[in-house]
Length: 430
Image (cartoon, rainbow, N blue to C red; front, side):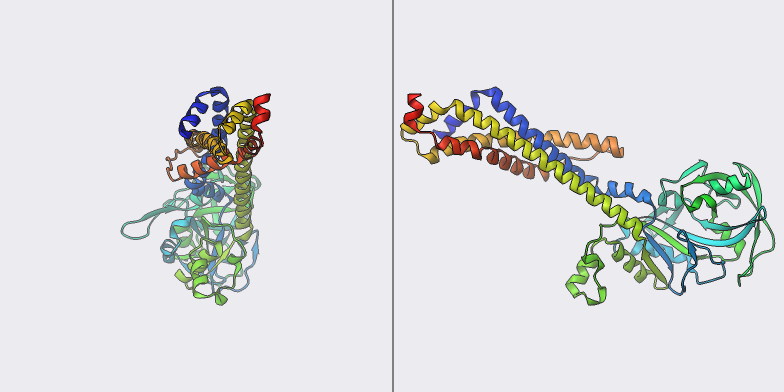
């Protein structure tokens, strides 16, 4: 009997019912879109934020205090210790190896260019590295710094002459694309034995980053190692890793953690946890987080998360208010009907059951429509922002239906209270 009454009630006043379903669908569409994006493109957002640069720096553990300006070690090449280039493959064997997006080794050698002292930096530009028999990893400065702007082209790793020249350095020395210049060694203050022969280099690209790289000269690592007689050695490793924003637990003293707490910390992609694992993989190295990069990324991720949560809350509240207004108008129009229903012996529980079942039907229909609309919206946003499509996550459907029911029932609470206060005698007399 109650089901028949609810179905007949839904069939009447279709315009108002459709508006209620549409309001619920809009609120659930925003929820579904945010949830789908959070599940499917979370890593893509982190990868976009990785354009900030490296968030981990690895140096030899035997080093003393570095002489650094702007994050670059300017000590002579013979000073301090070195890391073996062969150890770089160990970075892709740690627990969070899949979170390592890119890395690049760096070697610094003092030299003279057109009578001006410069520090030549050797690195990988785009290096294909064999991790094991089944995995090949492509890394280098192109992957590590996707926001760098290069006029011309990147130098090739197997080239003995190509180089990237910083924009400011090129302006100071009047260097242009394709120009050949001579680099001479400068071993002043260094214990390393350098070759006496000069090195002819061609400008393959002009680099502009807005940072200290604009005044630097970057050449292929293998060529610089051979020229400086430092085969197989690197001075520093810059690493870009996908990390979780650090909280209070991330800064815990590892030596004081219990076994369960240490496992939780170790298995969470904190930048400090990844640095700890790198030091385990390369015992002669010291890994340090670049906190100004990691903290900036963490703040952005947290603020975007808060913004999305506020957007979802606002959409659901608006949907609930819309349902409440529609249901209240329905109750006021059906005062005589509700009074007659009570006069025929219906209890308050029966009246409440009819209205709540009607609200539940609106919630379910609005939840289904909102899920489909939200999935389509998430697909369009992912395609427009990230240039890739996303799949349909059916696991979100129950969440959307539950949220739609809560919104519809919460919006019906006040109209239901008004309906239960209707007196049969007054309603029938009016």
